Amino acid sequence: MKRLFILLPILLLSCITPSDDRKGLTPIILEAGDQEIQLYVEVADDPDEHRVGLMNRTELSRDQGMLFVFEQPKILSFWMKDTLIPLDILFFDEEGNFLNTQTMEPCAADPCPTYSSSGLALFALELASGFSAQRLQPHLSQRGEVLRLRFAGE
Image (tube, rainbow, N blue to C red; front, side):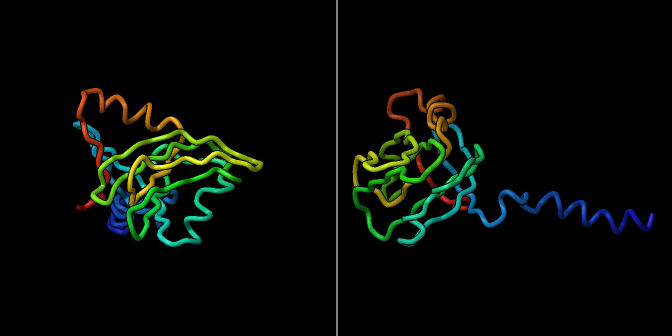
């Protein structure tokens, strides 16, 4: 019985502690139509982190990505130099409203194509390729549906 009292707190703690593959990641929510999709992201909020991004990664979990945060809204452009896996990129304005998405292909040699926001963006979200088609489009089937980005807890 004494062992149960010792093990019970450890078991309970393991249920609420993030799994190892999510440690250090920030939870965000995509509101897509009537659905909320929770994701876990690395936040890139300085020029060095922007420059490196997801370069040299060989895999990316379906519910993880990288959120690029900029100081001011502007037309954002990305390229895939030395990025090994295809990615979807979603652009959001300063209010967290969706602007556009594109699928980006790996590029090993210059010149690499660029992928840009369709308007002034403050956030860019990189996720595993196929995310937009598989997880967003089914919830955005009605004309005028809105996709928004927010931090979990807001």
